[in-house]
Length: 521
Image (cartoon, rainbow, N blue to C red; front, side, top):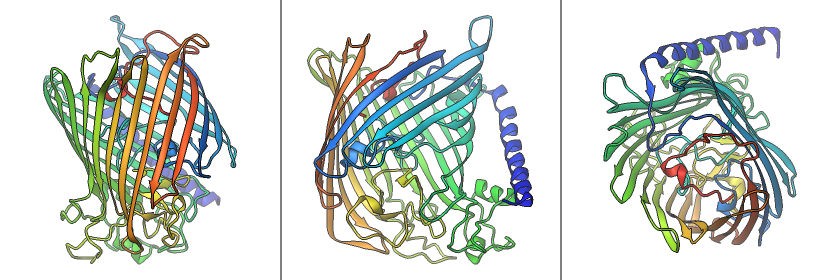
């Protein structure tokens, strides 16, 4: 990198930091955090764990649910063994006389060593940050769910499903719903603003940057019987190098283009030293969702209904792709006796991405079809990180199935529908969970599959607390694939996990979806 280009990058970074500081100074004075349905009580935390897993399969590849939505830490091939360890730390450094935390330091790290055909040592988490009341500023990489959905028993949010390693980034935002002043907690919001970087050893592009932000509003007090949720999640890949549709291989970069990235506005031919592709389209590869949800907190059950609408190329604005999206319902049964066999959580989802606004795209008109989800004309390696989809795992990489590749694009299969059931319960002292998914796969508009390509993927997982090593968790799982998308396979997984190696008082309390989550990894 030349001195001139380095100075330009440094100047751009300063401008990005200025935006973050402005965000930081405006919001904390007018908002107070609330506990809620998907909140985490931000008490002092100090905990570490160690986890050992053995994985096997009847095929050379692991079944779909054995490696999907595992934060990119489970290899796709078998056999394998994994050893992981991690630590989470959160400690108040400034408190009010009442004991309530005002300024809190947070940090964490996780390392996973994999013994397989391709041995690896991964670092899924390594972060540090500081929180002022409800506002957090964090740098590094960490596991983060985004979107209105049930991520523990569902298929994962459309854009961020926990299917790939977390990206390194800097982020500022409110993790929990925070009350809008003077509304008596009837209105609350949460959200974040972040920028990060992608890996450089991608199949097509390099030096890609990430911009991501979200904002969600809740209507209804924390203890209301009915609450409504709505918001958006917007992410962009931009500023990198690619051999496609660019001037001299460089995508638009710099602060002026960053403004276009953040706002999503088109340059309309105003970009200098840029290709016709860049001047006629939004800067970068934009992926987004608009989420809606309703929450019913009844006496015996808790119900969460949600819908994620897919946003791409203006199709949703004209309602061209309104059929596409993730629909779901999560039901939690309260105060249930767990001495025998019980089901205390049920999740049903339907994912549809076959419309894409139709097979035609006509610039300058209302016909905004052929959205080609998770693929992009410039960013041909798509909405992915280290070869895995960042969003729903049902939009599969071309390398994961036995069907012909779609040129050098990331996925050859983004026109799918999926019917999914997730279950969780107890069998005495054993906690069990199951995921059952049936999909119909059409490939893409440009390279459709021939005939009906249906696929079943399922898992059954159990875990039980034992007294070994001063209390540990034994885990066992079985997985299965049967259909025409993947090779048929049966997988098994055995593991043991020890938490609380350096536990401190007041561990975080996870509510609702997080409270009952079973770790089947």
